[in-house]
Length: 521
Image (cartoon, rainbow, N blue to C red; front, side, top):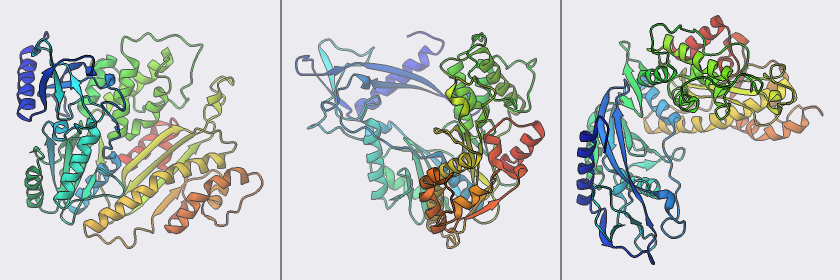
């Protein structure tokens, strides 16, 4: 083992083996290659950091090579859900709105809680490097990290433990657990708890420990999955990822004070494939930077969602123009490094959706031989109590033949995200004792260049013409839901359409106005 932290990682490896043996994770057996499918094992070393980038903990994880497993022999089902960030943001909004208490918990050696079915799944693994014995292998009793079935097995164990202590699995999110006192969400082994009284959370944690869940309680929800959550002096929550922004700037070489700032993340001119342009010249990994930016845009910085999505489309064949676009986003992040998403809910529960579309936005900029130049872009924002919960910016998969059709496609996509949000809000409202009788009267604000899209969206039977009939048929499902849920559609001015920030590059004045309404700064 080499490197500047070899001693810290070796100590972590010794602790890992001691923990696994104490939990009776395996038994040492003689090797027999004729009857065993012995898979390799590896060490995974990781330095966990605080959201600001400072070192938090050195971890060593003994893992199995799950890619060498054989389906039907040593694994069967593998699907395992994690909590949606929509649900997390929604609970953070309710935390501010209702002044809830929060706690964070981390499950120690999470995957080792669940046992393998010894009758169906016989898994043999090479002994760990540094601890190997000649002619011996490990026969696993517990689901080791790296096995394909491990995430699913732990989710089943966690769900059973939660139900045993009186929690109910949400119908809308399988990783949301509720009862009349506590609400919990789980992203694999990272769990967040909310309650009106902190004593209820402590009591629930103690009961979960009795169910065999090794839960390590931490402080309130100040940092979750790399997102720093800080309380403002006014009592609001601000979600920031300054540590991730610093890593992005370092990767792009923009961490110098000499690097100039930009005040919008994208130019007004759309980013094209640019096949005839110069090849990449940057010394950074384009795909790595895009990956970090996608995580940032999806969690705390919706203002860069459009620009990052445009760059991500060319991740596997970037040109010089794409690198320049990526650096522009970096310069914008440098100028706004200390900013984040401020959750400042208004009084009461209300849901607003802002779907928008940019019809054939690449046409006239890309080569006509590029089939995607005629694609329209969908962008929308869904807010709960005037706080962003869901945002999307992406090219439409089908080719719209008119502005109205592009808007209808965007509205249909928005509704697919909106209806589950309404269901979760209703469910949580009932659990937390809120008045949810008026939650059916949601306001969906829509800006349309063609007023016919509004008529087509909310009228039953639909008032379509022969020119719109072919795509009106596809929209029947959400028209019926709009009527059933008593959702109101409003026409708003272009300058107030928050979805516009997800469909195209804007001028600085327009961008900053929409950003202030969406993010609070």
